[in-house]
Image 1: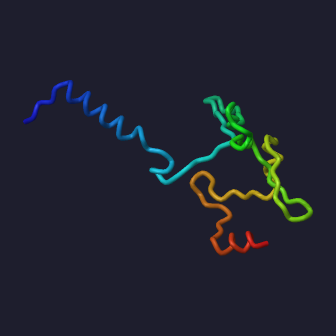
Image 2: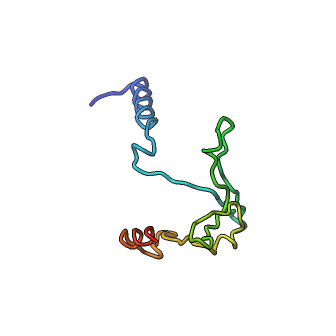
Image 3: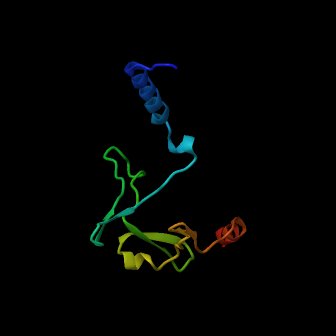
Length: 119
């Protein structure tokens, strides 16, 4: 039976931390974007917060949309976005829920998406 000293455990933990430290959205093959998060308390109440990025050193190209968004079409069929709208306002517009609480809604496929993109 092999006996491990506390030093070997520490080394293993350092090695493990080093291994997970460099995983990025590229190495994991996914990315999650968010503009709003909600805290639900044990008493059932909830509080929402808009989240966004606005780097101080940015030239304006990295600023993200804030809070709920409402995507609309203008009279020429061009899309535009209203940012930081209320939850009720965001329910209208062109966006559709695809996945919610483990269930797929409004299922589509790439052929339908390509057709919509041509319009």
